[in-house]
Image (cartoon, rainbow, N blue to C red; front, side, top):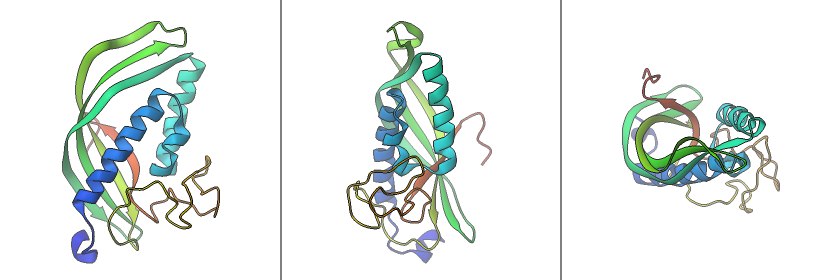
Length: 181
């Protein structure tokens, strides 16, 4: 139905965006730098990430993912309502995953053992939006280099970029054991 409403929708371009956001998320998470991922996530997911990153900062540690790579992306669900289209995928990936103290001490995990996992990632886009997913890092409204503040608005034109009005944004990440479809 989504493809019928939007014949220019491309699964390949969406997967390309997913891969770009996946890579950006790994870096932002590992370095406790949430503004790097702000252009690609919804307000709720950003607040959740901020909560955990603030907790890591207060605990004087950080969770690190290295050599993260996507192994496979499977379509899990597609829904639409009056305001949003939503696509949930099961993201199969691998990475080195550990937690390190600010003093460099290993607190948990392993610095050389690759961990394979899967998560359910839900992406949303406004139902009025049409076309392929963008792969660049320019503001979709004014074309300036995409620089966002905490509120998810472009520093130049002040339009809100993270609400799904312009492109697919990551709205939710669920672990295998909590995803209910």
